[in-house]
Length: 497
Ligand code: BG6
Image (cartoon, rainbow, N blue to C red):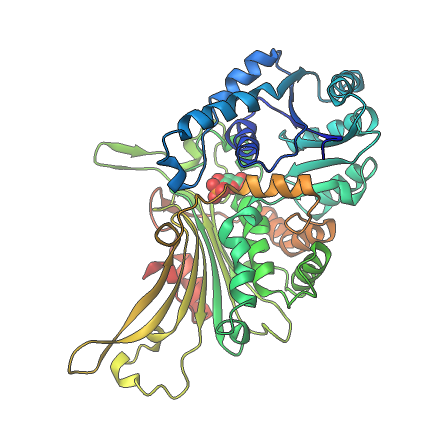
């Protein structure tokens, strides 16, 4: 409303995440009129910068994400540039240490000036390494909390390295903040297709009744990137792919996929169901996991580096850059259904998808037409999260002609063909939700604990036993071990054909 103000303080404003994701997302929200009338953005970091210098850096990261139809309109460019100018005028900078109460007091003064006595809401986005979280939260909550409105803090993984360190971080943060002030981001929950998962399932009669062990043979959650840890080896080596992708992004998707119907779409109802799924799962077993690491090779004149060639990675590191795992949910709905996860860097393609393989049709009349390989005839539902967002369903169809030949074809909902609108970036949705106090897409602390309980014993065992990863060439499809793991459960990875 006109009587209140909102400030968004980006702590760690000169970092990569801030530049690449947060400022552009804030601008996109502003552009589309989602932010309240009186809002300002404060960049906070140690580097000394003027407001103008911050605006200059921020301006280089902004783009116009708009309806494709609007782009054709002649006044669009001008309109966008005007909006950028307006947005930049609302950006300010404060330089300070992350552990200095005086520096946050200083920030508080500057905020108060801008708030001019109105009802003031304050959102802090901690775009900084996790070892600084507690210092910043302490200083911000003691010295820069809003006195009249709400104060919220957004944090992003890593939330510790295991159950113990994560629990410790939660306890430390809760010395200064209430749970409902903490917004833990898992940016995969902000992705359009992940948000669509529940819509597909719960609003389509052709899917909802099939969503169980009675009809689903297995579920596959696949994440691959076609680049290595280039430049992030220092961070990555301390975590590895299991902590970087599986314990959070893929597990969150799994929980959403497998949860029981929530009482409503309210944050607590949905998160209650997600926690139940996580708590019904078996902790991962070493024999159900394959780890890999990419090795260098040359192709023509191009050299592909090994993970361990990264100067920030310690020699002889055993950190996995690839992992495949089979997980099980011991409840009535999912008993015995393997949930297979696969995540890797430096693979042949960049892709994230959810694949649901259905059971064979009992007494299949057309067995003869499929030969002995009934797997070729299973229906498969695929949600391609990225790139080129799509939902498609593999069905069996008769090839036209006088004979009786069947093939598997796709019913294909390709977003770029169906919708003209640009797909918003995950951070846009999540920032807007945080501003609006909508917590459904943020991780509650009991969810985080449950997620860590599943992975901590495995991670400890891998590290204690110094299990060496299976090497795979940069740009390949990953270690063959992943196939054996799937085969053990009678599964074939759907992304391989
Ligand atoms: C981050 C991981 O959480 O997700 C990165 O730390 C990974 O290693 C990134 O590259 C992938 O995100 P996106 O949105 O590009 O798929």
